[in-house]
Structures are given as structure tokens and as C-alpha cells.
Length: 352
Image: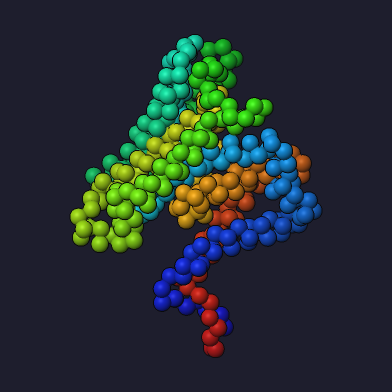
């Protein structure tokens, strides 16, 4: 019979192969899913994965949706490498969008490049302030950052709902729960005419470069990597555990906040209670599929963005629910976790 046997050492090959295996299994699972739903699996595959990229507008949409995923994932990767588990990027994303919106509304009917600059700063600070709550509780009372950061997501969702129903509601919006539409000076400039791709994509690419330098070329990045691999060795070397907790959580919160800013100042152009498309949670999957590597995050973000676009296409042309993209995301995570087992274990036939 087949049994799992622990490897003498972790498999470097499976470490890189398991994300590819998870993607292949997700695609196979998708074909089975389409068949189970009574749809032509080949046609479903075409609509889900090929049709969204059939023109320049579709490619631009791919990069647009990948932008917040890159920002969220690179911020989370910094903390994850040190085993600091920020699961609340969704809430930090929302509060970054709220903070950036507050700046846009404060400078309503004003002009100048300083508005966008202040919105980026406010978005980052808003996300970091939200992430500072689990950081403080972790370093002061040794609370579980997973639970605290996750619970704060629901607080953020309720907070933004209250704001757009109250203080930030558009006075001329016929009581719809949304803010005013932002002025042109509070919107990110477009990169490709005739599409929605904006300058936030350049922010994301810059963040990946900075993240790579920090994680692989800086002393603080080295400290966090050591802490992730060998906590006792990091303590023996005198590396501050509290400092790493703060860096890990604030980097994730700051990047998620800027991602929220890119959404309200980009395709949305205002603040609503539906500011997030679960980018904060999807960014976690992106970070793990990419093996916490900035280059991998770029490609994993494109894959995750394609799942969003494919879900929209499937909803429109195949009469499937919008949640179909979440099903594919869930399959990707499930197969990734299953494939990761073979990094430390292998199947071996044993006679009973």
C-alpha cells in the first residue's frame, strides 16, 4: 500500500514544482467542474482563460487587476518570510482606501500633483495604522496576530459601511452609500489610452523591485529570513523579535493600504462599501504560489487576475455565478497545500 514517508531533507525540486503542479491540477479541476455543471469544458476553458486576453483592452485589464494583488502580496511576503502571519490585509486594504478617499474629499475642487502624493501617503499610513493593532498586541501581550488581524477585517468593513452611509456620503448622491466622485486631480493618470490601466501598475512594479532589494540585499531582510528558518538562531544572534514583528506587519499593512488607494483613485474613482474585491485575501494565495519571491509574485498576480477576469467572462457568456472565480482560487490554494506535502514527504509503496 502507498504511504507517506518523511524525506531525509526537504526537496528543492518539489519546492519549485509544487506551484506548477497546483496550477495544472487547478486547470484539470476546472475542466471537470465545467463538465459537472453541464457546460462544454473546452469552451469553458477558452472563455475562462483565453477570451479575456483576446485584445489590448483585455490585457490592460489583466495588468489592472494584477496591480493590487502585487502590492498586497509583496507586503505580506516580507512578514511571511519571518513567520509573521498577517491574514488581515483585506482590512488594511479597506482602511488604506478610506484614508486616501478622505484626502481626495478634503481637497475636493482643488488641483495640483500634491493631492495624489498625499493620497498615496495616506493610503500607506491608513494600512499601517490598521496593521499596528495586531503588531502592538502581539509584542505587548503575545496575542495571536492571525486572529487579531483577521477579526479587524470585519471591523474595517463595518467602518467603511458607516462612513459611506454617513460622514463621507455624497450629499448629491440620492442617498446611495458612496462618496462623491473624485476630481481629476485625485485620479491616477492612465498608462494606455482607451483602457483603465493606470499609474498604480508602475507603483506595483517598483514595490516588487524594492521588496526584492529588502528581502535579498538588506540586513533587515536577512534577519527576517533567519528568523523564519531558525527562530532560536535569530534569538542567539541578538536579532530583535519585536522589531521583526513590527516590520513584518507594517510592511504588509502599508502595501495593502496603497493597494486600496490604487483602487479608489483608479477604476472606482470614489469610495463605496464594496471597495474591496477580496484582493487582501487573494494576495495571500499569490504570495504562497510565488514562494514569497518578488519575481514569482509578478507572475502569480497575473494568474490570479486572470481568474478574476475569467470569472467575469464565465458569468457573462456561460451563465455561471460570479463566485466561479472564487472556486478556482480555492482549488488553486487547496492543490498548492496538497502539493506542498511532497516537499517534506514522498509516496512509497510498502507491503502490509
